[in-house]
Image 1 (tube, rainbow, N blue to C red):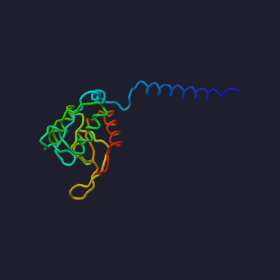
Image 2: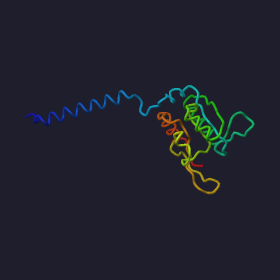
Image 3: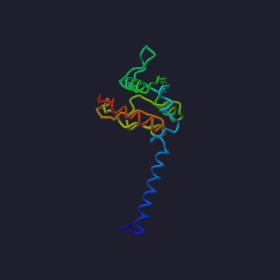
Image 4: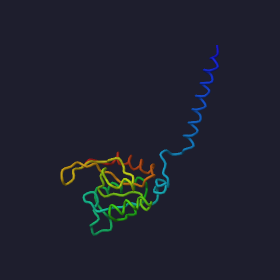
Length: 167
């Protein structure tokens, strides 16, 4: 015995909608996506990292050309995983946030916390560690990335989940 005509139409409509959704998802490519293909450009290329002096997270006062600090070590490990060379740019937090917004940088580090004032100019990662500030207040630490570069952001966050640690 066959299904009533309305039930067959409902199944057919459901099948058509499911096929349409599948075709849409397949056509979208990698989700999430980067608006300017940052992850593709950085992988095997240059990772443009802005840095501001904020020990112990970042220290740019050493005599060598290489900065140091816990976030420097973390980002160097990220660059290794992406087979990327880091191109460092040292500046103030405000200048780094502006450079991210313009697309001149891919990432910025400097002991930023999740209450950073730069969220209108840059995307922030999910917190990767917590540490007390000099006043004893526990702060959640994040890195800054370019807005719209969601695939790069998600890749960075996955890395931070695996390699970020409590201080």
